[in-house]
Image (tube, rainbow, N blue to C red; front, side, top):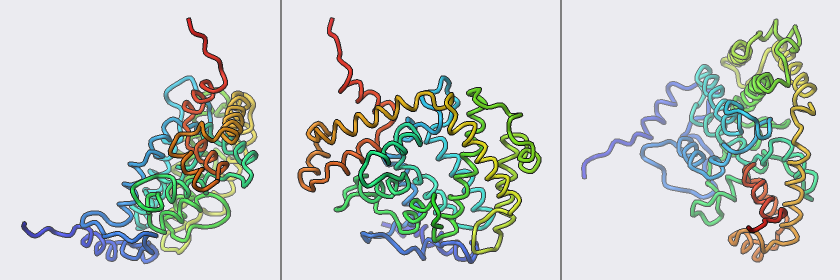
Amino acid sequence: MGYFMNIREITEKNEQITLSKYACKSKDSRGRDLPQNKCDIRTEFQRDRDRIIHSKAFRRLKHKTQVFLSPEGDHYRTRLTHTLEVAQISRTIARALRLNEDLTEAIALGHDLGHTPFGHCGEYVLNEIHESGFKHNRQSLRVVEKLEKRGYKEGGLNLTYEVKDGILNHTGKALPTTLEGQVVKISDRIAYINHDIDDAVRAMVLKEDWIPRDCTIYLGSTHRDRINTMIRDVINESFDKDVILMSDEIHYYTEKLRNFMFEYVYLNKKAKKEEDKAQNVIIQLYNYFCKNPSKLPKEIYDEIRNENKAQEKVKDYIAGMSDRYAINKYLEIFVPRFRT
């Protein structure tokens, strides 16, 4: 067999030469919980990206709500399309700042793997009824560390420290330890604020001229202009620095726009008219499986018998459901079927 060029080593050397001094180089990763032989083609962060894309949790995102439950139309965002938009914005910023695009993309693609069915209303109700609470970022970490099975003794995808850190800290007060993770954190906000406006206008919950006038002056009057303004500002403010940030001015109007969305969309009864029904689905399923753990899929029930952690396993099962799977399971359990 002839000599095979080690592509990974070439890529690692190129990273050392071309990336910013603040970038996280693949060769400098803190590694994985379970050591593995390195690939001769892909870097560690490229492997993480591929593992996430090929996971079942990633595929389920296509049937999970972003904001609007069961919208009548094909153009509304789902949790998957939101994830792809975050990845695109993140890579644009990372490339401009000469950061590690592969690490950035892996974090972006994995950041919402733990999201519940029915969007944030699902997260809210599961946090209320589960005794130890529920946060989707923590569940996303649990998905990649424990719930996705790839043949490792402890389960999970056995991702690198840097990707898991970015997934865990993409929301909340804590900052990711890498600039790539910080890029995803700010890109997530840029993505959802802007695409949720777009969807709200399409759903006739919002009109463009309702957006605060000063926000349109400083950020832009169209979806494209606002995203462009925010991305350019992040790049300008963060270039050759050891932190990712917006200018005070753009940050102020971005936060004002986000608060506006909470008032007119996220808490709007028309936009959320089906949420009470969706929350009831989750409550009923959670209570049913906690009382009847033997009705869970066999592989989950076997884990409960071994570990005696019924509520935790029920929470994992429900959080992993797509919207339509949760509804179908609810109908199967609680709605009688008549035979003709």
